[in-house]
Image 1 (cartoon, helix red, strand yellow):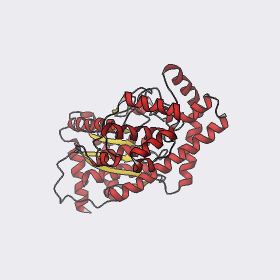
Image 2 (tube, helix red, strand yellow; image 1 turned 90 degrees about the horizontal axis):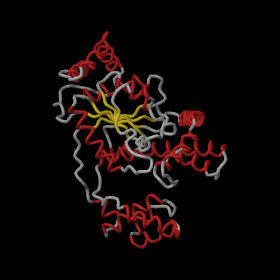
Image 3 (tube, rainbow, N blue to C red; image 1 turned 90 degrees about the vertical axis):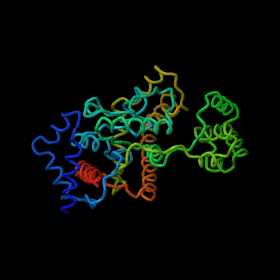
Image 4 (spheres, one colour; image 1 turned 60 degrees about the vertical axis):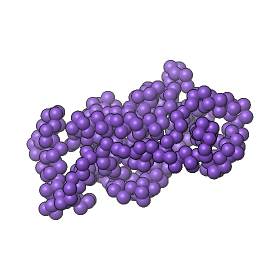
Length: 370
């Protein structure tokens, strides 16, 4: 373990050598905090860490992914109190302004713990794509690293993590006029009819989509019409996927799904009591929104919209909101299983362990030292 312990000392010292912001060094070294973290990481070693291999040339970026209600925010903030981090949100709902309760947006006190990025960046009237996320994240990682800090990408939008890791296909950009034409056609004939049109142009793409999946049908038909090629051919053409950092991924997963489900129900109850319905009512008043917009398709917001339209009762809102959140968590965990196969460096932690914050911190230190 001696080599590994040297590795921990090396990274702890190296992180703070020459830092522009001396507050981080003072925070980390005060009352022996550095020695305690190193000792804990060494004692609870989850990885074999040595300092015999050459150090990578790219600066590090930590990743923390997991299903909803798994403790990502608390773990990230605990990590931010130990290391010089800036957090990049990897969440397709947190990008929207004035959507605070239903997205479990960090509080003002939590946001003050360290700099946060990609929160409150677009209007609920607008869309925010995986391509835009990747461009923003790559830029932010480079800027944060240049400031002598470590990017920490935290969230549960697994498509964004996949896009970051695998890169993007060279797809044609969104065409607002074409999208309006597709939407008008769907309003007149229904999405199943538009799906049938897609099946004529690209049978393979249509076969993968449900006839009522409006968002994906619209984008698939848009790409096929603009490019004149089937969707699979478009996805085979890759953009430059160069990253400014080496990715060090950690994932949270529950050892008992029933405990996660109980957390989800408790959190959705808390959102309702905190005023989720009033938040959606205010959003409808202040913005030009529709139920088809990506912001209003977010879990919780979709069900609150249906309730305000009189389509469901309050009890149905409660039931459907919890059920939809559980389905979201299931999809997120399915993504993570796929990541374990394609992302060998991913370290998975039980999100139900009582010492989760310590485990995240120790694992991060080991990944940084490797």
